[in-house]
Length: 250
Image (cartoon, rainbow, N blue to C red; front, top):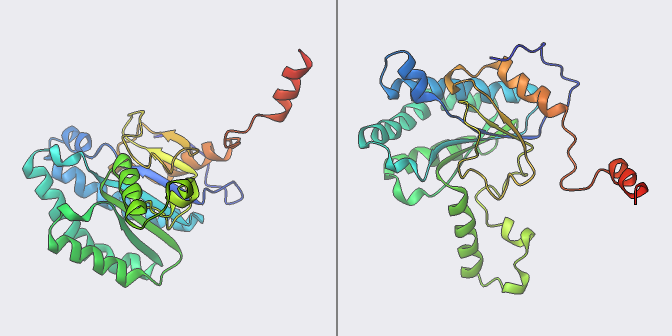
């Protein structure tokens, strides 16, 4: 993990952080344990991270819990993940609710069980009045699916093609309740976004960590924030000083 100084509250803090929580299986394998134990440790890391983000002033945290491609994993692992969600809700919901966390579930709910949908509805309804930080859990989610489903919703509501600009389509995206992520973190050493928030992350600052997700801690979070604070976010605009220098050469 990165060695960084203590968190400086005066530094720039991203309003919205998105995280691809990668490395649970490898964490378990290194310890000669089944992959399920890595996912279980990953839930503990998520709860720690939610509270750490809230303590630092982050308003929105969105995490990639289960992608639409994860159904291709072994049946036993998928079944274990579904059961783990139910256990996590039972174990941590009250704690997160008491800490002011609002929970939102984003993704295609049509493929999951009624029991799981009920647990999600319970988590959302019991935290809907909280405002300290909004935790959006992307489950059975994919960035391409998100764009397609938004287009379908717009069409079904009769939005004319001429009126369908970026702002109009954004209202139908799964994460329409949150601003676009300022900082996009991926753990586990992989350097790709893996079909996560393709629409929303267009101008997010990217931070890739070699840390396996169950080991993600405050030091690694602060390393990501320190890197973010140093970024010059221009959202596609040309650096005026560099542009002026280039024009002087013409």
